[in-house]
Structure formats: structure tokens, C-alpha cells
Image (tube, rainbow over all chains, first blue to last red; front, side, top):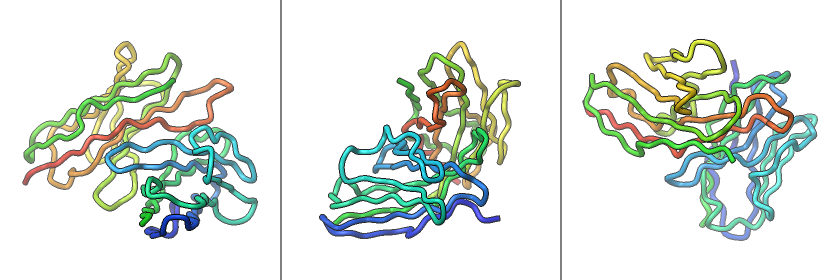
Length: 114
Length: 117
């Protein structure tokens, strides 16, 4: 009974490097959401994807951030030229197709930018 | 815009005390409501959810929540807390229905519960 899987669990990057965060949804789930949790704050929505489509990216920063969910393989959240303010926990959630309403969360990736 | 407010940021209780965590949301339409819990070092787990029907919902580990539509509230309760309930609790809302709703969760800022043994 594999839940949402994320890797790596911890990621350390220096300013200016790229960060790639991976999310494998629950088997059979075709909807993926990415959320960011900054220190001392709640989770903030970033992007919602279905297979090969970005449905809602209203929470994504305009620059340096991108996301994809290819036909095969995990969803990827990519942060280019990281800055210290990108340090946060990034959570992925998945939900089933056909309007499934409950989102199941992965363990998160904790990104630290030095 | 939708928003969720959790009034208590940090709550400290002794074991066996009763718990109530406040959650209010701002949205004019129909919503689905959730409480998630995040134990130290772990990921978010679903405690309970409300979609429709009986406004008093029961979740795992003895938690329950009551949806009061007129007050836009969805408070979390537990009659007697245990040390193992120490965690962070998040209330979340998603707009239900409508062509523009994409299912994104709007979270409150979280409440840290510390239960003293």
C-alpha cells in the first residue's frame, strides 16, 4: 500500500544551484498538488497538475520555479538558481481521478539553501 | 479570496484535558473541510473531513469536528488528550463545485499542540 513518495527527503543546495524535487503519487492517482511550508507558516498551494498538463499554477513564483507531471514517471518540481528564501519544506499530495476530493500527502522534501 | 484562520497558534495542555482548536474560513460558496495532523518529523495525515451530511464528523484517534455553516467554523475537539497527540494541526478548506475550482487546499497557519505528561 504505497502512499505518496517524495525524494529526496532532505536536500542541501548552495545559492545559485538547481533543486529538483520528485513526487510519485499514490498508484492510480492522476492529480498532483505541490505545496510549500515556510518556517512557522502553514502550507501554501503552489501548483496543480494532471498527467502532462498544468491545471493551476496560481501559487507558483513567476520566476525560477517550474513543475511537470509527465506521462511516465514522477512529478518534478524544479527550482533554478536557488536563493536562501527558497529554504522550506515542499509537500506533494495526490488525489484520484474523477473528482476525488481528499488529498494524500507525501513526507515532504526539506530544502536547505546555504 | 478564500482564507482560513486558526486562532490558537500554540496550545499547551496536560494529559486528560479537553481540547478544542478553532478554525474559521472565509468563502461564500460550498466548501469541503479538513483537519490534518503533522507529528514531529512526519508528513501530514488526514484526521477527518467534512463534505456533506451530518455536520458533526468523527475522525481517527478520538478526534471530532463540527461544521457550523452560519459561523463559517469547523472546530476540532477531543475530550481527553494524550501525550501522543503532541503535533501540529492544520485546518484546510477547498471550494466545492463550480467551474473554476481546481481542488487546491487553503490551509490555516497551524496550531502547535503540546501535551504534558
